[in-house]
Image (cartoon, rainbow, N blue to C red; front, side, top):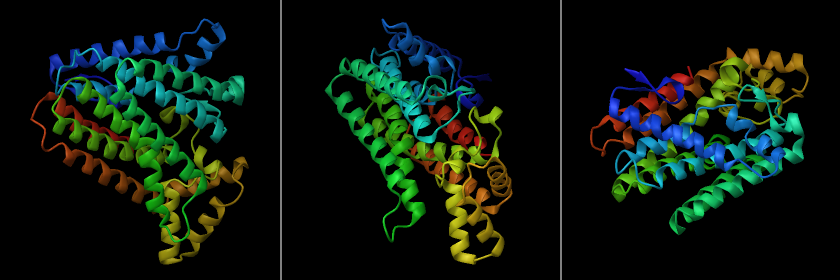
Length: 336
C-alpha cells in the first residue's frame, strides 16, 4: 500500500500511483509557472499560498477522473492547474471577507500585505486561470464560467442569508453547493472530459464531485469547530468569530426550535453575541465541541459522502474507482 495526495489516500495500484504522482508533480510545476510575474512583488504574493502547500484535493480528483480515459492527454494537467488556481484565488478573497489571520499554517495574505493586495492577488490568479483556459477550448471556458458564477452566487447567498420562510439548513446546503461543490464537480468533469472519457462517465464524475464537494465542506465545518490550528492550518472557530453560521450552529438552532432546552438556548445566545472577545469565543467553541449538534453535523457529512460513493456504481471496477471510493472515506475520517 502506498500513500498519495490529501488525507493519506492509499493507492494499491502501482501504475495508478505513478500516474497520479507524476500528474500532481506536473500540476505543482504548472502552479509555480502560472504565478510568476515580471513584477517580483506580484510573484511573491501570488505564490504565497502555493508554496504554503495544501491538500491539492481538486487536482487529485482531476488526475483520478482522467484514468477513465487517456490520463496523458494534453489537457489534463492544465485543467487541474486551472481549478487549483481558481480555488487559491477564492482563498485570498475569503480571507479578506473573514478577516482571517492564518491560512495553511502561514500568515494570510491580508495579514501580511493588507486587504487591497490580497484582493488584487486573487484577481491576478483568476486572470492566469482564464489564460490557461483559453487554450483548452470554448467548452472548457463555458464550464468554468458557469462554475464560477455558481461559486460567486453561493458567496452572495451566504452574505444575504435565507429568504423569509426558507429553511436555514436547506439554504446553507445551497450555499456550499455553489461555493465548494461547483468547483470540485468541475474537477471531476475536467479530468474525465480532457481524457476523452465517455460522456456517461463525465456525467457520473461530475455528480460525484458535486456531492463529494458538499461532504468536503461539511467536514471542514466540523474541523473548524473540533480541531486545533495545527490540524486545520487555520485559526479554529473563524466562522464563529465572524458570525457565519455553519452547519453545527444551524443544527444547534434547529434543536432550539424543536426542543427549547435552556442550555441550548443559552449556547445559541452566546453564539449570537460578540465573539470578537477572546474569552467569549473560547467559551463558545468549547461548549459547541461538546454539543450534540456537532455530532449531527458529522452524520450529515457521512450522508453526503455516502451519496457521492453511490454515484460511482456505474463505473467499471478499477484502481481509480477504488481510490475515488476511498476519497469518500477520507473525507468522513477528516470529520472525525
